[in-house]
Amino acid sequence: MTAGETIRGLLELTRPINVVAASVLTFIGAFVAGGVTAEPLAVIAAIVATGCAVGAGNAINDYFDREIDRINQPERAIPRGAVSPRGALGFSLVLFVGAVALAITLPVVAIAIAAINLIALVAYTEFFKGLPGVGNALVAYLVGSTFLFGAAAVGNVGPAVVLFVLSAIATLTREIIKDVEDITGDREEGLNTLPIAIGERRALQVAAGLLVVGVIASPVPYFLEYFGSAYLLVVIPADAVMLYAALESFDDPTAGQSHLKYGMFLAALAFIIGRLSVIVPAAL
Image 1 (cartoon, one colour):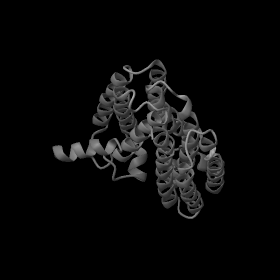
Image 2 (tube, rainbow, N blue to C red):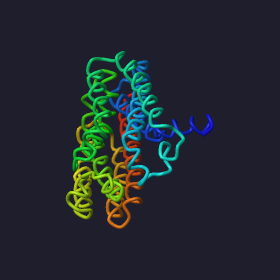
Image 3 (cartoon, helix red, strand yellow):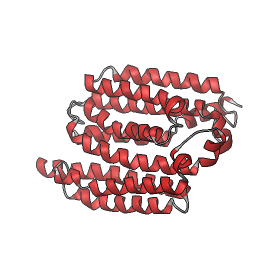
Image 4 (tube, helix red, strand yellow):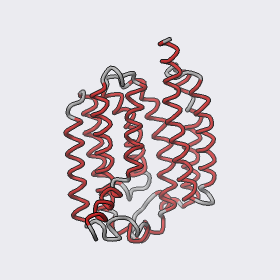
């Protein structure tokens, strides 16, 4: 492999789209908490720390999953030879160090969230991924906690708690669907994921049920007056996309989990618009 192919492989290990998405969620957490203009340096530190941590977690996940990926995802960087297992491990450690260095500049609550998340990222693949539902729940917590981390970075966690719960539910749904998609390779490696433990259809029913709970709860930020009515105008279409994706996953898990991600991005946009609909009129 050439140096360019190796660099490309290292970048792929981080899952750039996931890094950007998590960083945006951290920004949203800070934005909803009202700290973007008050604590800009803290917000920047939190965003970059999130990006480093997510990239590190994805890289170390590929390191531990390299044998499974030879079956499920042979085009990934390690299976195709662009990055060696040792190189992936070293790269993840560098990113983890960067995340820690930035996180320790933030308030105590943010440091505590970062410490818990870093431990969870390392432990996920090695200890929890193969436990039915446990690994899924851990990933859901990690994604949802980006809202908490951003809010904690500016010293106001309260408004982000509901967003954390809603995001965690949607992520848990998608993780279960992804396990259905990956069931062949997981069986080959002897993992006991939720679809393997209780059956594919029942796992999809659990995922759909969780999502229905999240959709029902999605207006809560509006009723708590964290967001204005514009939030509902965007979150309702997001709910519709996610519900459609959950139903689609019964026939095509790959398409279902992909479309569910689009709905989640739209929901994240609803959080921004909802917050703007509160602060813009107040500033006029």
